[in-house]
Image (cartoon, rainbow, N blue to C red; front, side, top):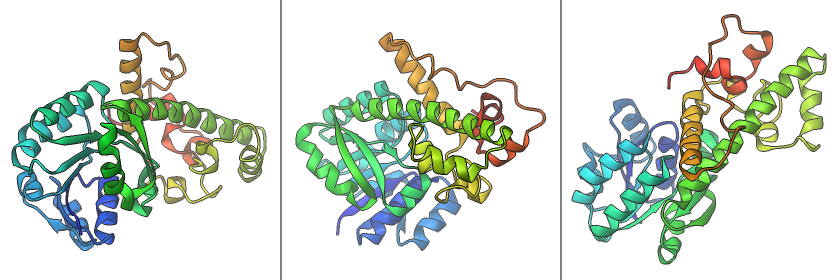
Length: 296
């Protein structure tokens, strides 16, 4: 039984922490939300009153936080000050590469092993324990990181040194944003042309248009495997989070001098005033207009 501190129990973190508890690890969890702490307790986690309490005797510390500033603050002000030096630190947040590398340097200076390990797969995979992890860490630390993530993972891939996990996640989610936008527009066009969504799904999922956005996360209700579209878009990947990831990609592209015009397309614009029938059936990332209606 491994002693695990889990910080951040949102839509993704809650399911991830629960899977660690189901694997018979001792999970001490903390979040600012009392409601998420109650859910964590119901799933077998022990509730901590603070980050310091959660990490005090941890062998592994896992964080799942909203953005780079939160990660810098939680590690710089709390985790590094209160966790045992022997603890393995793993940040699963999606943040900018510079922040990941800065926290890694700070952790190393304090005598800790650290990995950035953002995830892919969405909330359903977080709950099912089938996430894909993209890991940036020292090669010598990867086996320990892989073992710590195993109860939550379908695949754990060593992307490279510190920051490489975030680089892979940013590129992957830019690709996801582009493919989801094209998928939504294709289904909307198919409807306008009188083609049943079920038939188009059957064709596209077995043809050259096949992609994860079509075959696994289809944005149309009642088509393909169960997705947030079948739950009135509750519990899905919020458009605000996708916009955050796309902004991270554009910031990274600007710093690297890379041209990514397709990745820059899904940007906020003027919200739709009158949603079409397709917009009512297709999940929020279907167009820039719909994405703009979500807070950033």
